[in-house]
Length: 510
Ligand code: C2E
Ligand code: CA
Ligand code: CA
Image (cartoon, rainbow, N blue to C red; front, side):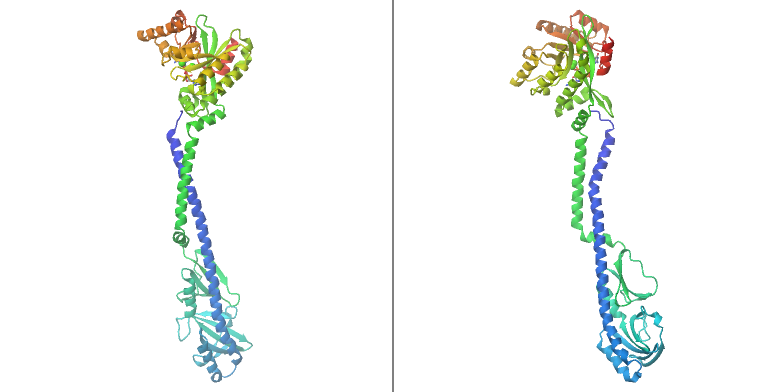
């Protein structure tokens, strides 16, 4: 087979195999990555919703205290101080309560009488303010809830400890922040006023519909991969399994498509097998009496390929039968238009392998071939090589009988190189012996081969078989063979094999 640039094909094959193996793994990983991102987004959303719910519950409780105290605003602090403390005691999240008159805190559950002007603009939606601390606990954040009606006002504060507890319990692996106006609180209970930090994975912000606060949830960088490695190990194993399977399929498909059989089947469909004709001349007159049809592979990349490089593969794969059929059809198409002008039957030699003789299909091929020509204008000669003898079975006998009935002749090719016996030659009713070119090449060179050639010629004479000498390259060989009554000659001296169409135009010119 013409197998140029083998190493390039090998590296392409390795690359395609790796690619087909990696593709499902990569695609699967991308899908798993997206799936992990989705799961994390869902988890962040759920966390944020849960935090909102918990904070709202705590604020409900805190707001209730302010609501109950609001009607008391305006009364003297000593009269209402007990009521303020009672709310602190009764309500689990309330740390302190205050009463306001005309935007001034005048009574506190902690200090009793008090005086502090307050700016309502500090409150988110006029309602909530997150503070770093108060004079009693300056480092513990607290959330102030304010309720006002005219000059009356009541405030209750929620301890930051409860808030950070909720953030910690609900957040767990999630980044979770509580934001009120410009201030925000982290899991560790720390108060911040600067920009909210960046949340790299699945950032989700939700605002409460009832109070002026929002929460932001999400995950730190690299969480998606961490999630994948912890949640998807069985799926990863499955992906690797699919990768191996797909890589193997890729490898075997390529191997199949690059196999000689596959390549030849493609070539057959693309009509790349073409006939070359080589002239066979009459021994005495040197006039062209026929041709031998020789197959060539017109390969799109490798150029013209010699038959001995691909015929063995064609035989092995069984493609030799359709290939020979195509060659016969092309030959008939080329020569049939000339057949009416043939004055004597024109010999057309076709090479046949033993595998072509395993059924009766060959009979039909020969009949179709002959029917293309003017009746009696050609002699079809099947050349069977002596190196590959045909088994004499009932089927082969029938086959050769039917072929003979069609008027087809039989030639033993490469005669002298194999082991055909007298019985074999008789059984198949051989008409021609084609003397192998190795004997012809020895004419005038090697006396022993010369003797062998003489014996072959004598044998053919005794058997009354016509002889064709192959590989005649010199005048000396031609003269010698003619002197020994060899009937037909074939070789470069009379013409090289040439494309069918070219041969025909040369023949027509003659
Ligand atoms: P073959 O049947 O013995 O064909 C003769 C070979 O000798 C041809 O080689 C031809 O080109 C070459 N030849 C002709 N004259 C000379 C010469 O003067 N000197 C030298 N050195 N060589 C000469 P080719 O065409 O390369 O074919 C090689 C072999 O391939 C053929 O040997 C035949 O066995 C096989 N082959 C060719 N075409 C077919 C085919 O259609 N079917 C089958 N089954 N085998 C084929
Ligand atoms: Ca031949
Ligand atoms: Ca031969």
